[in-house]
Amino acid sequence: MIVKFFENLSQDFTQLLHDDEDYNVIIEVGERPNYRVFKAHSAILSQRSSYFREKLRKTTANSRNTKCFSQKSISVYYFDIILRYIYGGFISVDNLNSSTILDLLDISIKFCLDELATFLVRHVIKHYLANLNFIRLYTICFKKDTLTDLQSMCADIAVKHPDLVFKSNDLKLFPEKALVDLIEKDELHLQMGEGKIWDYLIKWGIAQTAALTPNPEFWVDEDFEALKGVLSECLIHIRYHQFSIEDIFDKVQPYHRILDPKIWDDIVRRLSDPDSSMSSVSPFPQVNQLQLSSNIITKEHVAEISSWIDKRSSPYNVNNNPYDFKLIYRASNNGFSAKKFYSVCKEIPKTVVIIKVKGTDEIFGGYNPLSWYRPNSRAFGFVETNGSFVFSLKNGSIRESILSRVRNPTYAINYSPYTDHRGIDFGGGDLKMKFDPTCRCCCIQTSYEYKIRNIRDDFDVEDYEAFQVVRKEPEIPNAM
Image 1 (cartoon, rainbow, N blue to C red):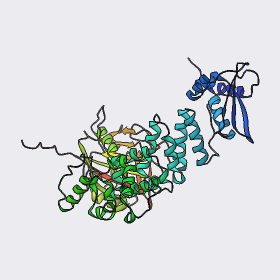
Image 2: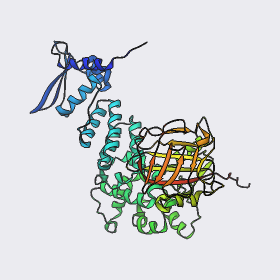
Image 3: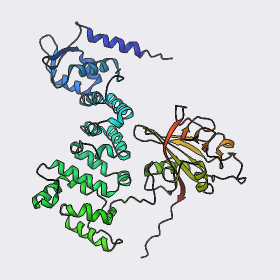
């Protein structure tokens, strides 16, 4: 049996910061009058931070065998917090605002403290997202190419909430690499549409070129060439096939001189012949609005849920997923009434219900292999099935999906077709939506394997969607 006493161990290490005898590192932090000398220990700094390990390796010890270096660009306040984390493994963020946390994040990345950086990103997204300087967060996370997890976390948020980036007053500060990474994603094009992406891309590009005025009517050839050079890495990711006629005339035409002439010729030709191909560009992936018309989930989510339906040991990806999710109900369009839901969906088998929680990144859902209908239309009660499951989806700050299959098939699905206050119910509470009178939901484990939410309290529903799961038609090869 191994017993671990990490709390006292951490406290003992922090006491070393007050030791005036055994230190062998002196760090001069800040600049006068905000200046302080910190005494530390090379063994601890080297083990906890590769930055300090390299710094100490390059620093020559003095006659007392002590290594001295400075950190003038960092304030005493922040360095004290970071040093206590290095020694004790703890940090308090309860009284820190989002700006302070971003400062700490920047420093933790500088010092290669990846564990702390990941915690700070998740904390600031969870608690300050609505009022967060998201451009600054994104910029900090793109300072190092190795921070792929943090960059992916930011990208997931930006795809779901693109206004945090594109409507920010600091859009011009958004790093080019981050912008390219973002506009490569199919989900962003589905969320925004090509016209809006083009507008913001032009706005960003003009902001990078100080000599350009906002109105292209007064530009000369050199101005268009300058904008083309700034946007060169971004333009190759535009889905030119997706522009509407209005977008072409109102948005693209004024700036068409930044495009390759062959691309512009193809665009103009498609105005008269929408079915014509664009031979001048690579066949970029196109977002199929009919295949996935969701305001909540992505194609990656669809592939994951499809894998659960087929009980696969290895998951589908977006390219080999054999199913389409056909939207049949959206509460924000069709209404939050249970009667309306049942009137639309009652005779449709194999449906997935997706629920977006108001004010968080949480997405819950359930799969019903049966139809939402009982032979006795006036009755309500449980219907048995072995094939249903409920789930929580990875999204933004939610880093892992949770799958929970039915363990008590007798109570798999609860029907309530003719009441306004009762809604969709998996398991009698595992995933239950109620209308009394507002749309609220709860996740209390009863008939399914696992909890999909740790909090038992009801929560508000921002929107919910229902999809029919249909198998894709096989592609017919072209005749020789």
